[in-house]
Figure 1 (tube, helix red, strand yellow):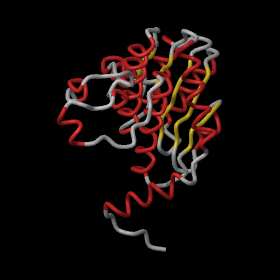
Figure 2 (cartoon, helix red, strand yellow):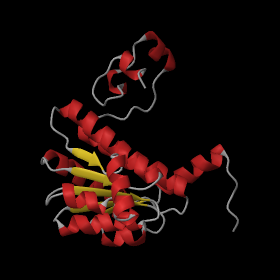
Figure 3 (tube, rainbow, N blue to C red):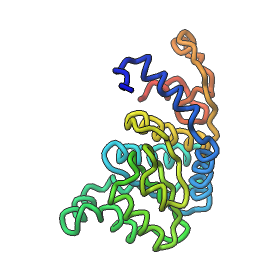
Length: 222
């Protein structure tokens, strides 16, 4: 069967259908292990390549900043993609397959959590990072698409988007990060915000961008 050509309506319809195939319980388990790791004071570490690297970085931005602001608790998190000096040092001096595992061995301890993001589930450097995390006694969570690949087999837990469309997978991987943020800071889900209310300044408090009640100014800063 030939895959349909792109249109906005077809893309959104593909997402609607894919949502029906997701294991919601697995998503919730992923949220719960991240939340419990943060609240126990342990470190949450993320990694990924390409678009998944951006997602891994976005995770830590949202979870540590918004979670800490909303709860007043320390949310200890780091993304292994963000220190370009370390990434290129390991890549140049050791090998690209060691850019994350090398950092894991330096930073991660027993009780910490590695969140490994890979659309295909087969990125060699991500697989090495997961194995390195297990060696030091850390927990692991795979965020994967396609058929889950090797990563879903070796990680302790997984959040799987069952699609071979990379863009749909990456969309839902990022959405998972926002679900975690909502859980960490007790955010509500706003179904619609009246445009006229926005302009008048009478936006409901739950529409705040930071999970907690925010002013209209907060909504316009991004």
